[in-house]
Length: 345
Ligand SMILES: C=C1C[C@]23C[C@@]1(O)CC[C@H]2[C@@]12CC[C@H](O)[C@@](C)(C(=O)O1)[C@H]2[C@@H]3C(=O)O
Ligand SMILES: O=C(O)CCC(=O)C(=O)O
Ligand SMILES: [Fe+2]
Image (tube, rainbow, N blue to C red; front, side, top):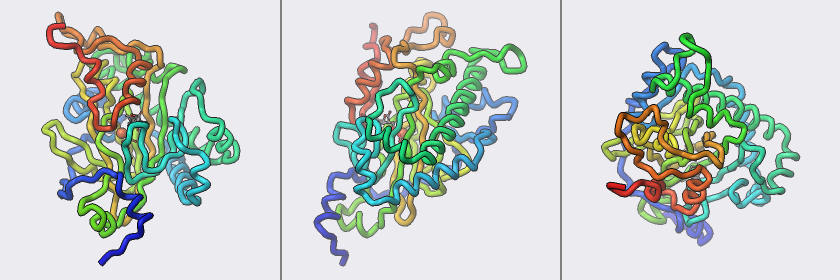
């Protein structure tokens, strides 16, 4: 019999559980080679069918990725008291178990960072990075590259949607989506998640069910660029409502359609629901760049994407308004609900 101490029990109790059903490993995730001549069209199809895809030939040097992963592991390997010095995330900093401000918890610890110099960053986080120049350099170099990748993906999507000409057919201009990320005021953020291994007998002894690493949710921003080590755990919800496991691939990037891109396309793309379940024997480390628009940007469907007579499904709002409302919600809430137009409105 497994005997668990009160401290261990306290650690588990608030964390959400899910029924232990074996999720199928999904081999149908669209994989887009960014140098393919039809990449734009293929990306649009993937956004419509899944709101999720994997990109290869992405141009991000793997050395930068590996360096940040190693630096992050060194950070998470420190004693708890050291890490707690730069927490709790409000919203930026180190967090453990608690996600957001509204009661969500998971089998996770993480660093949540702003990538926008205008944002107020807690002084304890600023001084931490001053003491850790090599972690800071690794984060900066990595974020610069994945931001470029996010812009490139959005530019290809714009071409696939017919919003801009293909690079070889006209001047290289940003369209109405990529321009939002290129903007110096783009309100983006970056997070490194660590899911320690969660031995099966622990979780079963506590609740008879499996624990959740990061509960189901959609990302509020435009797109998210996710990279993980070779540990499985990420699951996405398909359009038929079934959950499938995404096979890990440490040398590629996964892209999520976020709520804002759903609105920009008037629902032609829908944001993907996803969640993470911890592995029983291995640590999972994931690094995610969330590309968002400037705070004062009005978010509404791109006019040239609308058919004649098509109405916006959403009341107009700014990213700042959406973000404020999103940060009052629980992970699993449908955050676009309050912004949808009532029928006939
Ligand atoms: C419960 C929450 C955590 C979150 C803010 C929220 O209130 C709802 C959205 C969550 C999310 C999901 C994607 C990103 O990980 C994140 C940083 C974001 O922008 O929205 C998180 C927020 C968070 O962890 O603070
Ligand atoms: O850690 C992961 O793989 C995904 C986490 C996630 O969805 C998030 O941080 O928003
Ligand atoms: Fe997410």
